[in-house]
Image 1 (spheres, rainbow, N blue to C red):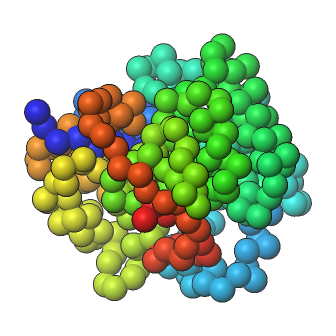
Image 2: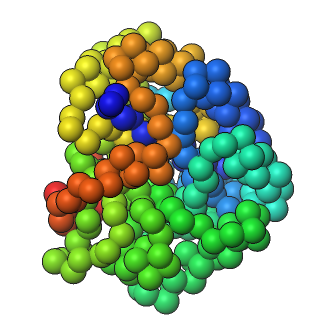
Length: 299
């Protein structure tokens, strides 16, 4: 059986939903590749990310890629000078079309900026309220309860992990790590499989250590030349690979096919693990190269 590489699509914004998602669906179909789309389901408050300018490392990351080029000036004003569009209400038909095209869907978040910037320090009540907003909206759109979650910005807390179990999710993909696992938080076991992102994202690599748009695909393909026993999970973004970086993504798809990978959804990846005893891995918030601040990492 071919080794698997699961494709996880994070959809952060209204522009990504409206423009990037349909393009990615068509590209994936052309390559006979599967994927899972994780949607932001509430307001697009991306303009409020301007507050991050005061965080160490933020200006350095922005200087490595054109944020305006990828997200558009309107997106960068949503929630501040422009009203925030409700992604779930405006984009429900697009989301259902993804499902109808045969792709798995799941929850990314309700309000991306709110979750990414605040969840790490919040209590159980805040966390449950925010997550249940996403669950309710997803159920309204798809007519069934969600079964998978992928945290915005890989930001989590103990209460959010517990809710993956309470809500009966089949799996969650909230962390960065090297292999699928059963997560623990300060030794508390959470009975919901965690499928970490195992490969760096394009925006973490671009314009660092001599990596450019011309050689970034080759760089990642070097990393996947030797397949680990449990395969890989690659996270892409509707705003990036579904936009200006689509040619890079197509290079990756062709390269992974040539390397012999089966390009699968997160659910197919989970099903391939059936019968395997997953190790327990401690989740903690730590610095991660190429990202600003701390992320949920599995030890």
